[in-house]
Image 1: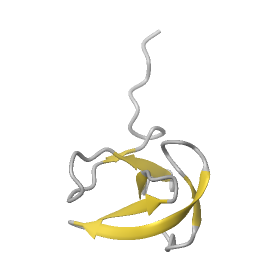
Image 2: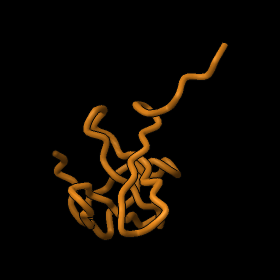
Image 3: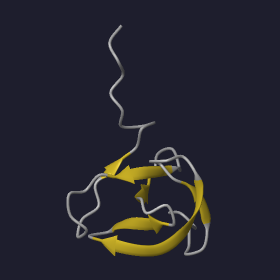
Image 4: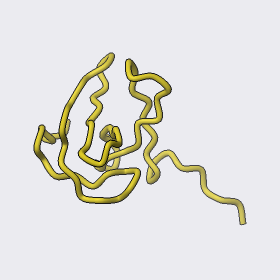
Length: 75
């Protein structure tokens, strides 16, 4: 579990800026972090970093971590 709280500073998985967490919400056991840069992130339990929330709706959280979930490019 993460100790990220409202007003914590995190690195956004989308824009890579250090930004403040403005709002935290949980959907079906997954936590989403709304950030001051207007992106919504979630937390990757594998690499312990912020990950993209790629959900289509605000009522779900779909984690995509560029470190852990990215498909390697073919040579």
